[in-house]
Image 1 (cartoon, rainbow, N blue to C red):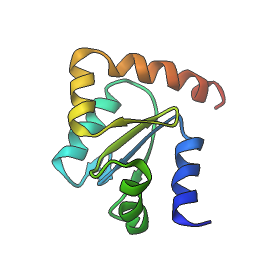
Image 2: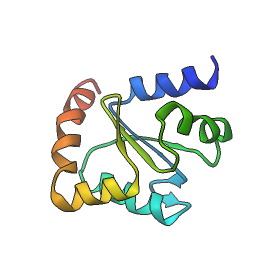
Image 3: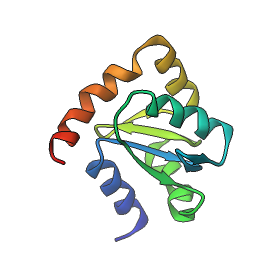
Image 4: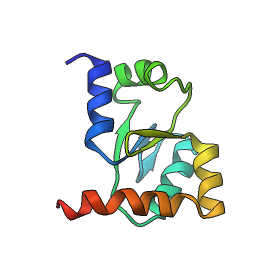
Length: 110
């Protein structure tokens, strides 16, 4: 499977996925820290990919997404955005309902 197929599969297989630098519990940049904290505050499990330990994904996801920076939050196969958008949505109250709507389908299958 080439890297573009792998990215596509990760996005399709996880209703909520955050591509970030580091992990939610050990972010490796301030933007990834803010984004992961906002997503964690929604109270649902979510997938993440550490782009620092996956250099092929780090190099190719910006092309796949047509979005140049990390982190990137994807919900139901759609790019939500990066740190600024995630933070703004969290502060305005838009992020939790979006993740709430996506998460039950995944959690029901556990």
